Length: 410
Image (tube, rainbow, N blue to C red; front, side, top):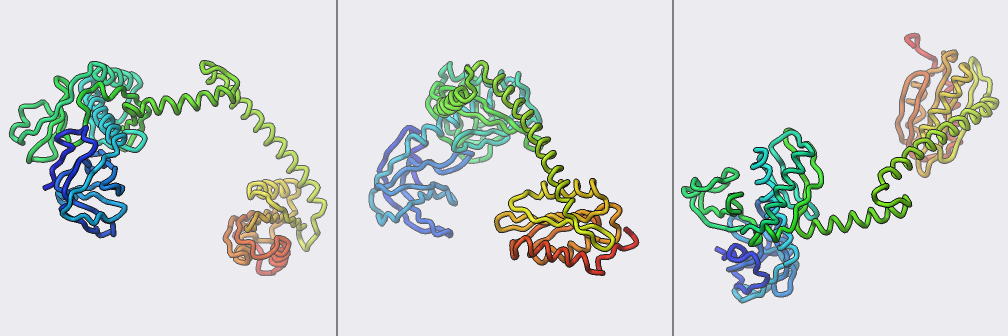
């Protein structure tokens, strides 16, 4: 068994140990097993420690069938010899703050509102807990955060104690135990008693502060996101930088930024509406001019036009405008967009002898694409396997085919 120095003293940053084994796992990752370690293996919602062993970076630490494996970038080549281990202390202490903060916050929710924590995850930037409730209110969030920060300011001791399963009944445990052998309790006297294998600071004051960020529903639970300790200061710094930049861009002090942003969005919405109206007027004028170029065919008029860099939405709008203005026209618009070709076609209600849906089954395979629609309106696209003008010509030839006569059911 590897001696777990992180349980003897969570503040150990360096240590010496003997190498018991070196190996490669099923995924080809190198690992070493030591007779003692201060590296915490991933577990219980807390990520593993990282650091170095003899100057070689430790990338991961896992407990595999009770054996703690230290995954390394390179082979140690030091079997049965002493090595020096060094913990990434900044990462370890951050995890200690976050994990202790989670205990405090979960206990606050349970004490104040009877809301239990069902799971916990310590991420790289934030921490989340899943709460056994389907909703939260601002009042509940404020009271829980206030209570948690009061416990932190009281600088209560955080104690650890090993007990047997039989002794566990003497303590008001916050949740059911997941193990039945030796049990490690993490205790904040008169507030929280919890079976936990994670690392924690000596006192609640070292958590510094807790700040709730946001929550969302997850099925029948609520997932709450928050930060503790140094992460609170980091979040504050990041948000302050954003506020300073927004204040500069909006030319407004912080207390008036919301109003300035709202006014800017309203102005943008009005400008967008005016722009859309102007675009529609331009398209309508463009279609009116194009209709003058429509060619008379047997039983209908044909308008075919090729564009560069027009959206499919514009093609659709133009096709509909064309048949609104002239119900006897078949309008086909092709757009070349980088390596794509797109086509939209429409026929007016008076043009009853052409089935555009049938035309689609012939035209889109020519460009290795797909499309479809109704007998009076089709759209689709594919690869630019030919110039747009060639596709337009092919479409015109397909329309002249007798096989495109409208079925009676239409």
